Every structure is written in structure tokens, then in C-alpha cells.
Image 1 (tube, rainbow, N blue to C red):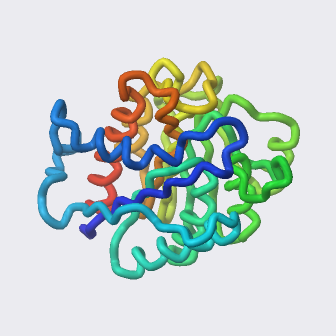
Image 2: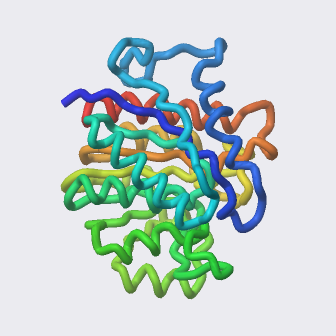
Length: 269
């Protein structure tokens, strides 16, 4: 069933543990989406310039930068957009934004599954005394009891603590060293996709705060966006750091992902 997609910026990075910069990312990705060097068609044949496919819903505005208040503002704003009958693609921001974004979807879609692409599992129960850290969103989500399944791909930084948390919550992890392009990825029920750009090898996405060599190629992630089995209902793209980008290269990668995700969300596939 076709639905309009709302593109929403979530310009925060105050939960980053290393570098600032991802708060600037939403506008950089928007600029790349509309760059004259490319066009507005998805690889799957959707004309993204056509009426009713998507709208830019702007950035979420925050009256307070208190961490709990920011998280609740993201959750409330997202639930409003879903309630209007739209599907939501969010542009971070650091990965902390995924906790309230996905929780809002889980409260609207029973049995929600998560497909998470990242170098990091982001499963710390508490990181630097900040429960809202960008290193902790998936621990927070699994604690809610509203997530049916969490599948993480491309992970290559697991430590002992995160292995324990993953086992505690039944998280499925396919580490990058074990990845096979022939792997069949499928879900029963609705799916939310969260893409941290450092899940890619830095050769393809240098504009991130945490360079972790040995990751996915751009083509591999596009293939995942196109081919995983399940009904995509929402997504986010996070952790672009324009301060570290080279000639806007990573922003263009994020824009390509955004176009393909918008096309799939619109079609309801």
C-alpha cells in the first residue's frame, strides 16, 4: 500500500562520545539529495519528484536540550507523523536518536523488527554515565520489551560487555568477518531499518566520527535496502560527520541510501 514518506531531520550530537558534527548532517544530506549532478529517480524505478511520494518535513525543534526531554520530543514528533498516515525516514544526528525513533514505531507497529547496519552494536547498558548515549540505543530498545527481533549486520567492535547484553536480550549478530553476500535476510512482520554510516568501510564513507576499517561497500548496503524480505515501515540514517567528510562523498552516499529507502517506504514493500 503506497504512502507518503516524511523526511525528518534530527540535528543533535550531544550524546556523541567522541566527536561533534553529526548535528550538521541533515542539511548536508538534503543538499546531496537535490544536487544537480544526479537525478530524482531511485534505482528501482520510482520517480522521487512525483507528487505524493515524499515531503521534507523539516527538522525537529527542541525547546530544551535536556537529554530526556530531547528523547521524548523525538518520540512524540515521530508518533504524530505516523498517526497522520505517513512513513518516516529520519536523518541524524548521532545514533542516540534511534532509541526514541524506533520506540515510536514500536508503539504503532506490533511485533516490530529492527535491521541494524553498523560497525558497533550500541548495546552498552550505560556508557559514560549517559543512558541516552549513542553507544546505548539498542540496549534501551530491548529493555522496552516491544521489539520482536533485532538483527545487527556488519558489527566488528564487540567487547565482552556487549556480548553479554546481546545474549541477555536474544540479539542476533552477523559480524562483518562472517558476512556472506548470499545470506538471506528476512523478517516476519514490520521492519525498521537503522543505518549507521560507519557500518561502511571508511573507503566508502570517510565522513564519520568513528573509522572502523573492514566494513560494507556502498553497493552491499544498497543491495540490502533493495532485497531484504519484510515490510519496511520506517528507517533512519545516522552518524554522518560533515567535519570529516571528503568532497561531500559520504553525504552523497547517505543521499543515495535515502532515495532508495524513500522508494521502498513509499511502495510499502
